[in-house]
Image 1 (cartoon, rainbow, N blue to C red):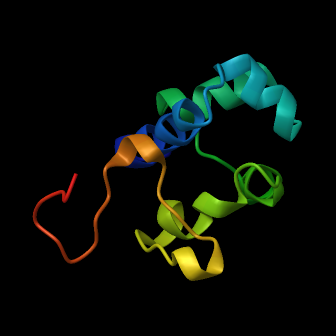
Image 2 (tube, helix red, strand yellow; image 1 turned 90 degrees about the horizontal axis):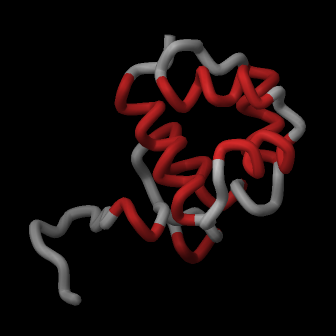
Length: 94
């Protein structure tokens, strides 16, 4: 199964893109019930589904954050806006 952490990350990605679960599943071509299972932590995301999800141009930018907790804005790799992820910093400058 996906860890709660991973399912929370999927939810943050979706919410940052202002999509609902159904829209997200349809966008990447994953069955709604299957995707809902990933996001709720009741099912483990297969490699095939992860590839579908992160190959989609809308979600590709979150791949490194999801998999490695790393971002590289120069290479287009960011964290979801709702994640408030600031590496090597203890507080927000906002």
